[in-house]
Structures are given as C-alpha cells and as structure tokens.
Length: 294
Image (cartoon, rainbow, N blue to C red; front, side):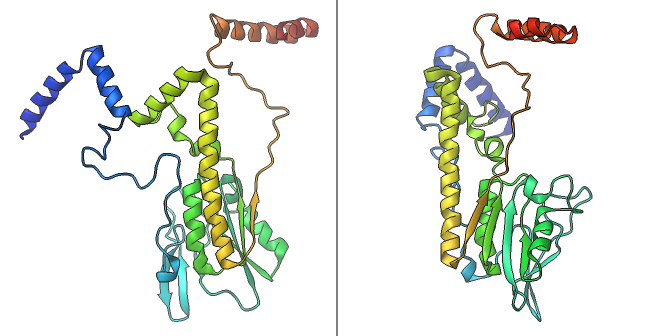
C-alpha cells in the first residue's frame, strides 16, 4: 500500500472513530486485550508491567558485562573495563578497571545503590563506597557499583552479573527511587493506553486513595521479586546480603500542595487560607494564624 493510500485509509478510519459510541467500543477492546500488540503480531514484552524481568543469561557460561564494565581478556586474567564517560559525565562510579581475581588475602564487598550511595553531588571526589573502603582497611576491597537513577531491574541485573567477581558480601543502600521510578504504570503520564485505562478504572472505583493503594501493592510485588532474586544470588554464593534504607526525616518538611480534589471550591479556599495565615504570621498574629489552621 502506498503512502497516499495509507493516509486515505487512516482518514477514513478517523472519521469512523469520531462517534463517542465507537470510541467506547475501541476502549473496551483495548482493555480486554483484543487490540493489544500481541494480538496484532508485535512481540510481547518479556515481563508484565511492574515486574522484574528474567536474568540476562548465566554468568557461569561465559563473561558478561557488569553494569557498564565490559569483560576484557588479558595476559594476567580477565578484567572488567569501564567505557570513558561522556563530556557531561554519566551515572556510574569512576573506577576504570575491576579485575576479576581478588587480591590475595583480601575480601571483596560489592556495593550497590542509587544517588545517595553513588555520592550524588559529591562524586567522584567523595563517595560512600570510598569512605567505607577507608574504614574497612586493606583487608577489604569495596567495588562501587552504585549509580544515580538506579532501578530495581538494573540493580538485580548488576547483582547477578557481579557473581563473576566472587564477592564475599553484598550491600545495597537505597530505596529512595522506588516510589519515583518503579510505579510508572500508576502515573497519568504513562504513554501506555492500557496503563491509563487501568488507572482510570481504579480511580472510578475508589477515588485517589484507591490509586495510592494500587500503586503501593504494585510496588510491594516488584520489590519482593527483586529481593527474592538477590537473596537467591547471596544463597548461591553462600554470602551475606545487607539492605540499608536511607534515613528519612520529615519533621520539618513543608508541603505547599493541597490534597487532591478538595470538594467544591476547596482548593481555592485552601490557598486563600494559606495566604491569610502567612500574612497573620508576618504581622505577629500567631493566634489568628492558628485559628485559620483549624
């Protein structure tokens, strides 16, 4: 079919889909999966939304990259080599080479994590892995595999590939990114039609609280799957695994956004009271501000 023929067919189809009733039929076909990519012949995604995918091969069958460190065979053994960072840097630790063989008498700790663990805003001049290595001394080698914008899927794959380093300890320092990066299916900005439809159906059934609950359940399932895979690696190697969650202090955190969907003119009243309260505090009228807050 020529380009012009396709354009003409597309225009006719658009005309047919203009009616609200036809659109409702198409949406129901999408929700039931009858118009999904798998049905029209496109390749299925390897995992369902919110799941962690399968391991990228078996490290015991041959060398695999460890994150961005590529395996390279040398006369003295295999070494994993980091590509040069771009002009504006990248998300990874600055260590250039990681020998597969450990130093004699030295134990190896593989350190994973997100922006905090990677030393965001301080790296490469100062990183948690570097400080940890200094504290542990010569008896330990700390391999920094943390990266900014880390995801559960990326972390699991890096852990599985890091088996090639024969670690004695696995440490993951993170969790900050989970609510941000691990539940895109619960975002109205997700470019997936089915994701938006599921989100809309959840919203209709139970409002905003049901959306929050659904995202929480989805995240919990994904975290459990990821942890199960990492724990299985630790058991296979017979080594400990430590999960460290950054401390969070919200005691002095101030949010300026109102609750979603306050009824009636609730949002406008919220902002009006906020402004009046700030003005009273500025005038030294603490009791008046307290009255507004109630």
